[in-house]
Image (cartoon, rainbow, N blue to C red; front, side):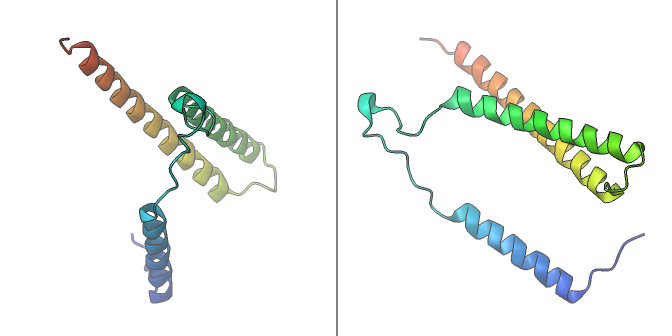
Length: 116
């Protein structure tokens, strides 16, 4: 069973997709490499970015579990669609984390197999 989409809804989705595409294509400012030692002036690095993304995945998982428990206990301020959206966000974030891990492991193995 499919739900029909009206023309205004379709136009809204197209506008949203165009906005996201233009946002993704917009040039980003490069980090300031004039800091001492040639390191980026912006704090952190790859390890820090990885740690933050894992923390965000964990936070989404915790939020999803909390909403699910709240809905199951019958709290009136939690709707089913909120529970489902939180679950989907957590699931997609987890899948992304797994794919990033797989790519990192593949890259690590490729580097370790290089002959010097």
